[in-house]
Amino acid sequence: MDKFRKLNLKGNPFRVTPSVNSNEIVWAGFKNIKSRIERRITRAINIPNTSLILNWGEYGSGKTHALRYFCSQKVLEQLSNECSIPYAIDLRFPKSKEPVKEIFTQIVDKLDIHAIREDIERQKLDIQRILSDITDNIFMQKVFSVMFDKRDGLFEGDPEGLEFKSFLYGTMDNKKFLSRGVSRKFTNDNDYIDFLAILFSILTYEKKAYSCVILWIDEFEDISILNTTNISNVNNFVRTLIDKCPNNLLMFLNLTLSAMINVSDLGEYLQEAVKSRIIDSIEFSIPSSIELKEYLRELLNASMYRLDESMVDNEYTPFSPSVIDAVIQKLGDASLRKYNEVFSILIETAAFDNVAQIDDEYFNHIKSEIMSLA
Image (cartoon, rainbow, N blue to C red; front, top):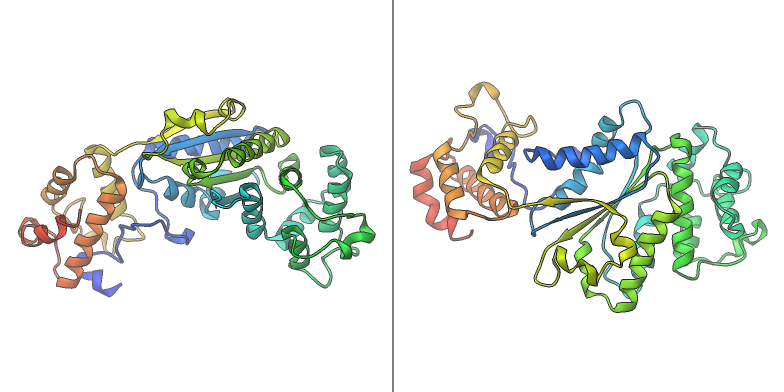
């Protein structure tokens, strides 16, 4: 934007909340976290393996940004190399009285049934043979026969699968599909889990249409607000889905530490059967000064934000290095989100004041106003 041009920037790099547009997502710094997540995803892409990963850290430590970054089509294509791309689904932990149903609904909301059908057909996969291989649930076999059979299924008349989604949501009864053997609607958590497990197994069958399913659940700390019954139901969902998708499911749980829940408190909310399935725990820790400076260098010089590389005075342009040091000294052990907030305000204030560089003189002029907001 023009108001940032004098600062040699195309826009404000410091987002307080992660962008939902994958084209606006940049990863800067924190190479260890990035490498560990990349390793888990590339392993899931290449090897038949189901894994449960816990991401944990303070509020504003970058967990949601990681979710948005690694669920983007562009990044997954790069990680897939010559393999089939993963099918990535991200959702927020449910806060309703029926958490498993809400998880199911959020996933169905994101399903592109038309694209799934095309991808399965493109690989010439035999749905009936796959169904006989992966499940003995006759009812679910009939449901998926309707979903994928293009003779008198939903390819004609409803190419986007809206009627089928209505059936999944429970807003349309099963009468339309009764002649196809779909004798009832979904009635309980087991139906929701069975449908998802079979769907994920179809999508990743022999890793042809998709190499794996990545299911990323954000704000998992909200499990602490559920009653005992629903905590048990969520545990059953995670455990059963993993057990029924033994080959190609990668599940990430984002956990924010708070006064209500800490990593050491997980035993109150995760049953042993689920905890034992967590194969990796990735900490999003409070950044050190070295990590912060690396993050700032890479973010400010990313091609998405840097306007003219030939006009860079120093690696932190438009900030003087001494200003970076002053902010770090002032904030100390703060979250990455807090640092983003302060640097964002500095950038916006400088753009409004039409200055070209945020040096010591300018910073000292405005710091009482800016740092009071930190």
